Image (cartoon, rainbow, N blue to C red; front, side, top):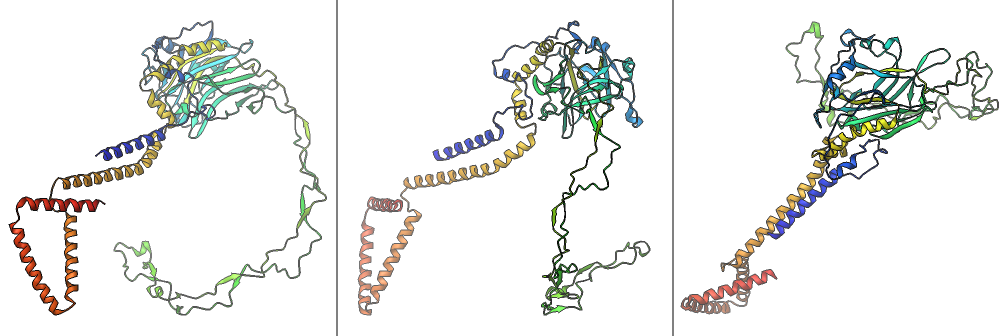
Length: 596
């Protein structure tokens, strides 16, 4: 029994080790892996603290725009839902009829905390709000844009970006806000399938002709997939400074940075020189690096017309080949379907099947001589290539001064911003936007996040269900694949555990049988086998003695019978205890021999 329990404990320990190996992953640098971790993740490991949320205080002197959406009535007065329609699209989907609502997150942390939620999916939705004061890019202060997004149902295809609308007549009536409304900056996450983006686009005005061109920031080195899967709030921040530098942060971590002058496509400033569109390549320009050797001569024995394969003249038709029998014959068991219409379906023909006569023959049908490689075949002759003595290099048109050249050394001075808007299409519903601010002070934005986003993430990290979200994060939010992997490991482990339990059961049964045998004096199976062996040996000895002489055999038989009669008489006169002692001694002796 002790062995059985020991085996069971070993099997259980093995299962626990497999489970731990399946779930556990080594700690890695999240930024290097393209995963953005919350900066307050370590706080979840500290002793629990009482976290209380209060709506951040908004001092309009410090903000160009700020809305925490907690005061629903006041926030509704600020935001205007678009009534416009998209151009060049089907009428049934052209209208901006997506539904917006102010409500608590699905995962309620505090009842006071509200957000602006896009409720509908697969619909165009647009909503915008006027800034408290215009941001004109004239001061020596940076532009700081910061907001939260919680993709409560995840995101497979859709955007969660915001647009900073340009000052002008097109933005005076926000009910007409649409995809054509001019904006100065577009910023935020976007995803469709495997295409994951973190937009930072600004519209640059050509100082010469006034044309507007979109400039796209280079993509971050790492993909940001976690915010689209984990269904947790994430903080997005853009800082654009007067020295033309910029930073993009997610959950306080820099994921992209650079210069407005050098890290955008197309670049802000065009090249000073361009190719002359009127320049043409000269007719005698030789740009061939190598040419066929003009001095090379084709060998006399070279046959350009030789074929790659020729018939094998040594081959002969195998014996038993049936040239008069076709490979395939009409199926004799087939019959025309009852619903077959000759006028519509044509003349019915039985399907073809393999000719049974050909199964035992070497082959059927017309025999053809097999082909073999032609030893005379060399292909078409070509002269070897040599360096071109007249090579002039790759031709390119001459350069001329760019008539549209300009040099804007201060692209930070963009078109002033007067409104902020959300113009989206999403295949997922319940996108929650929260704590949207526009300011010119990085410290103000950091303090605002500390009193809203950071408290929220610390609370989520410390609550009782955090272990599940951490486990999901370790699984890259694909628990199904990990379940299959664990099941794959569990199958051999289960077989091994079953083997151990079965072996323990057999050993336990054998031990119990041995113990029971020690408690009784009954003859055991192995005792009966030994007694039979002894009787057989006795009979063999008797047969050998009988072969000496017939007279001696008769005399020995009489003597043996006499001895047996005397022995039986003595055994009948013996008392019971003596028999018991002899049987016990004999049984014990035989068991000792078996154990040895």
